[in-house]
Length: 147
Ligand SMILES: Cc1cc2nc3c(=O)[nH]c(=O)nc-3n(C[C@H](O)[C@H](O)[C@H](O)COP(=O)(O)OP(=O)(O)OC[C@H]3O[C@@H](n4cnc5c(N)ncnc54)[C@H](O)[C@@H]3O)c2cc1C
Image (cartoon, rainbow, N blue to C red; front, top):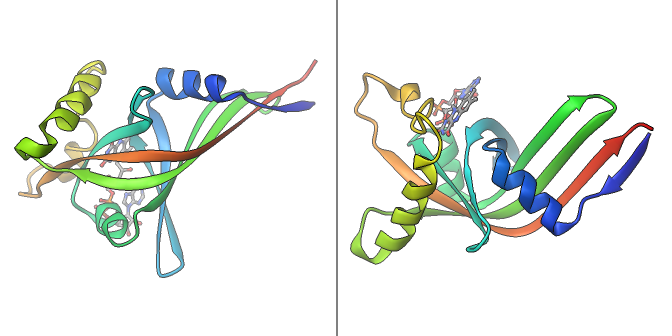
């Protein structure tokens, strides 16, 4: 099996066509990983996501340094994975942040039922939902292919 590094553009292509990833955050040395849906904005160098206010949001508010893993796995011999490191930032529903929020919502609308399962996770409760972005600081990608 040959494992190769992906180019930055190949990483961007995977991030654009995929919208399920595993978000890693940490507090007091304790990592926490959860599946999330996201939308990648190559022009602005960030990913957007939508969430109820729960453990991951509290932890990212405390420590905005996060990691997102995204993969395209056919089988153990054929796969591509991308890992990005970045900084969490909440996008508030305010006039100053209107442009960023509008951009996030435009990208969300491109996915059917984009609010699921983030909103379903808190159905029946009065938990507030937030939109946030992760500013991408570093991206790496790898591919395996067996001849
Ligand atoms: C395919 C998929 C896509 C998803 N997309 C999104 C999304 O875009 N946005 C979003 O907010 N959520 C999404 N979820 C749900 C997400 O994975 C979390 O379950 C949810 O957001 C609650 O996370 P929280 O940190 O707020 O947990 P809280 O509700 O605060 O609960 C924290 C506690 O519950 C446990 N817990 C939380 N989530 C899970 C889980 N999935 N499995 C096992 N234990 C868990 C933790 O260990 C922790 O102890 C998605 C889930 C799946 C499977």
